[in-house]
Amino acid sequence: MKKHIIPTIICICLILLVFACKKDGETEPEITPNPTPESCGDLIIGGKTYETVKIGDQCWMAENLDYYVGSGSWEIPFPELEDYGMLYNFSNAKLGAPVGWHLPTLDDWLELAQFISDQHGGYEIAHEDYEWLNVGGHLKATTGWPSDFWAGTDDYNFAVYPAGNRHYDLSTGDDSYDPRGMFAFYWTSTQEADGRVRMIMFEYNTDSFITTWLEEVRLVGDGYSVRYVKD
Image (cartoon, rainbow, N blue to C red; front, side):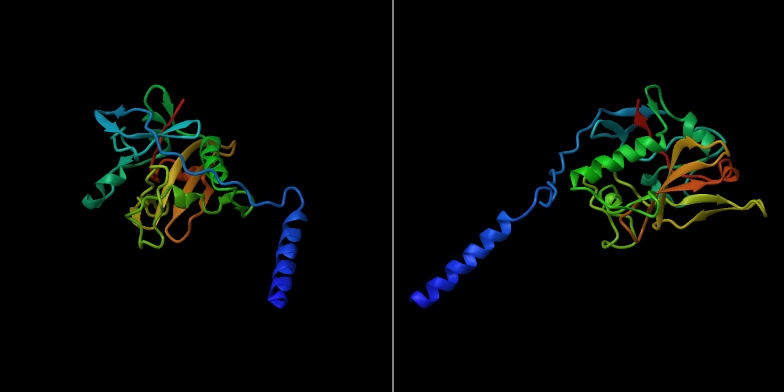
């Protein structure tokens, strides 16, 4: 019996020694459980009522804008995608905001990403600070993406659907609707001196939250989805 007891005691001591020798700061990051998403109250735009959601200190539309602002507002050419909202050029994306709300800046979007990252112990930022790994998966809808594997968990009731985009061909004057089910593109209001505007992109085959540039020539002819955030 003693032959079995002594090795057991030695193993227990070694385990305790390993834990005791851990340095400060080497412990696993504390993960805060997802808060139950709360509404900020209904938002009415053009006679339609939109759901809202509070995420951190921000209040966001929980649905894509679906209101004809003017020329430069385009319906998605597939009736079964009516829940995906409409697509807008840059001017209409800004003009459609109701009083007390605004087209989010890049910093507004990054605050959202930072909050979600912090909630989950801190996510890596890759590719020169424009791609937040894993953040997008918490915002993508649980349906509408090409497969369940690439759908999101929608932990914050943000429900990003892959609405695609309207693309205007400068060389031919033709326009086309780029692939539904594959991407979601959102405007920011952040514009550089050279005219470029920052965009937010969610792809079908990744859970990343990506910021990218849109050239100035695309601001009038191309159409993207819109969300507003409360002032």
